[in-house]
Amino acid sequence: MPAKIKLIKDFPLISPHKQRPFIADARYCEDGLNKPVVVFVHGFKGFKDWGHFNLIADHFAQEGFVFIKLNLSHNGTTPESPLDFADLKAFSENNFSIELDDIGALIDTLPGTDGPVPEKEMDAERVYIIGHSRGGSLALLKAYEDKRIKKVAAWAPVHDLSERWPEEVLKKWKEEGIYYVYNGRTKQNMPMKYQIVEDFQSNRDRLDVPKAVKNLNIPVLLIHGTTDETLPYQNTERLAGPGSDIIFMKVQGANHVFGGSHPFTGRTLPDHTLKIVNKTVSFFQSE
Image 1: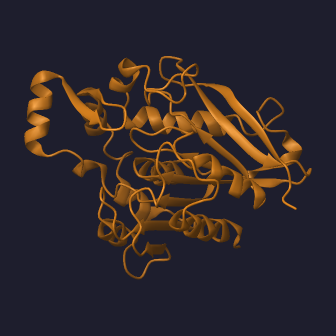
Image 2: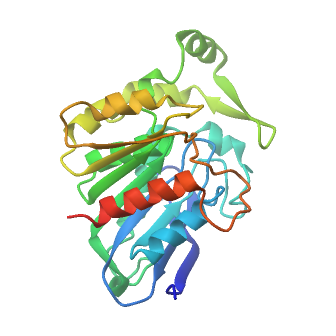
């Protein structure tokens, strides 16, 4: 019989940027053992409770991990409305540096007696990180700059943040100061201020995904679906590079969200998601 999962829901965190509050969940099985910690980072227009993410969290908890997923502070949600893009002003002011610092703020809470998870239930010396889509890029960048992270897995990551916007888009964006991204699910025009471009240009070295991956000296797992409608799997395959120790898994027939959707009404993980979850679990469990 599966062990009962302990859920610490929506515990509060504070972003180093504008002291903006954000929230996270932790799941684990209470057994008094020092379990590795897995931090999960959502992608663009995503949030911690999107689709089947809670089922993914339960699976990792049953496999012996403390699984923590966060709402990045400027993703457009709020602690009061964690499932809705209720604060488009915050969304417009988001950038990659803020997101990396939010992840750091979460990891800062892990050691010590004041964190959300009891010390006896986790091993703060074994922190692993997973990210999906843009969150995969953030996971790779954070793993490179934060030595507390011992392993990293990126699911369908953006292989190079510098290639996200065509020149003609950037020119118009700079002139108008704001660019709108349509969210087909919520029917919202989501604003992005030009400051995200300026932040990238000012922090190119910190936000260089290919450089980070090339210089990571910890185990790296990259996973991508062959029918990803958003990001071609070949980019991630090239990111892994020939002759490296990076593990690259190509999932035949998988789309960008590996069979997930929002809302998600299923009680079990989609086949493609289960495949990548099992691969990531074994990757984290291996010595």
